[in-house]
Length: 327
Image 1: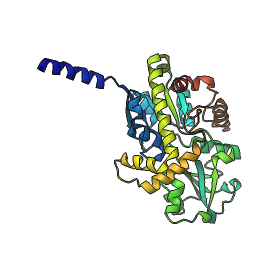
Image 2 (image 1 turned 90 degrees about the vertical axis):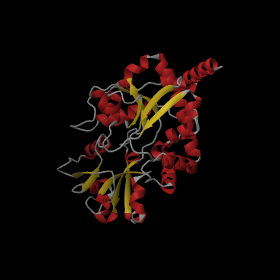
Image 3 (image 1 turned 135 degrees about the vertical axis):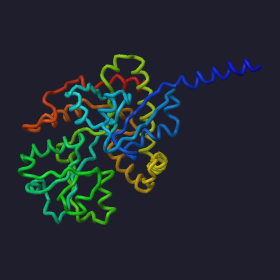
Image 4 (image 1 turned 180 degrees about the vertical axis):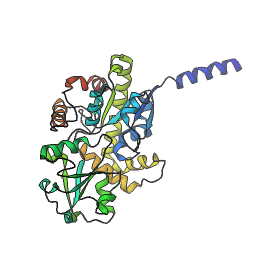
């Protein structure tokens, strides 16, 4: 009997360890920006696909590119400008899915600073995130004909809104789902602010997409595994868009710092939902070639200091995993 139980135990443990392991590296700390992954994990969607998924939070000192280059993740969430710059620098990242098909990036300015249009940026101090997030801004300034350090002063912005609140900068970088609301929550009236969306200014580039190392796509087993990952992830995102309150609860439960609140995360999720206009359709996560080409064009057009010096062509993205997820 003991022998039978021992054999059963071995069989059970073999079954339990049969799940394919996937590690995903996020671009930032746990928040509704990544709700789809947490919802898919919480609701058992990854497990149902036979996956054992580890979600690694990001942070100010974590570069998704460095993590995947060092084999610390199978897939990373990253913005396309950073991913394409990394590819040109020798880290062959490939986009396998584009979760956000709209940009949430904006410059938020106090009206009192005298800024009412982009022509008013000249002579002003503008807060900019670095670490790969500066590329869209530098492209925009080049398009306007402004030279950093001469026409405008750049304040390397930390991941907070203090420079605007303390009048150290006329404008700062914000996301519609996060920092913009931090400014409002700090007591600044929306009527006292003026905002410039990169999307509306014609300088937007694709943001939260999923990237893997190019060589991995030659392995059919990896493609099949990541196809399951995308299928479960899209299911998580569809649920998050449909039910922001539930998504907020799940995100808060995954924030080990205890700083996230359901109210703030629900508002964030409601704004994130606007950036996934194809949620609930068969096209969720599909990278539209025209959107990719538009981003590449924006990145190449930065005057004397373009983000990328040559068009990476179709090698920088692949639909093979997305197609596997749709089967």
